Image 1: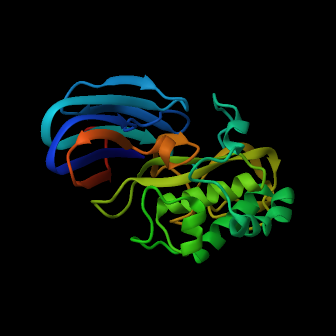
Image 2: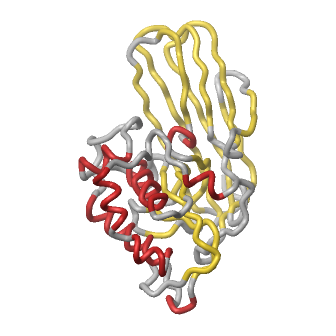
Length: 287
């Protein structure tokens, strides 16, 4: 699938910002099933590029001098695979790295009990258990805005019984780790029927090298064929596996490691943020 993407984030302040530093993970993470054709950032000043601890491309933008707004824009085109989702066995990072908890994925007793109800199934069929976990979370935590924010831990979101994609991904990651499966948070984009949507989040889990699928799979595969080992994406908010509609920006232990934009500032007073994402299927010669 060929996708045209634009992502604009605008920060407005009711007082001048004297100094700010923004950490931007706004460049797609090329790899199996994702090819970046061209991509550029439009920023108010030059930014330095580097790789973070998880191998994500990160730009560090430092701004000095009084300003009332900061506008960040990412634009580009990518090609994704149209093949049914299958696990990716290759990764430069050791899978056990994603078994540890993190500030936003630390479990409490209710989450431990919830995850434990899938333990027996996960031992026999990891992927099947994760599909059941995904369905259960969809019922237990319907997608509702306004109950959580970027700083809400998984345990708190689970307790409220509501959440958005960030909360769904972090609760799922927490439960998968409790089941002994390496799991990580993913930020990125999703092509939908809507022209203006927000950036998205889902989870990836490292399946064991041999796992069968006795339950019906959401991607239409013959369940009797089983599932090879590797990383596989699970979108709890949309109750499906991550396929060619998904564009990965960054991975991490939780939102704090993989969020598209994160920063610190001096001054500025009250901050208002607005973002607009446009992901459109098209052809390579479209502008």
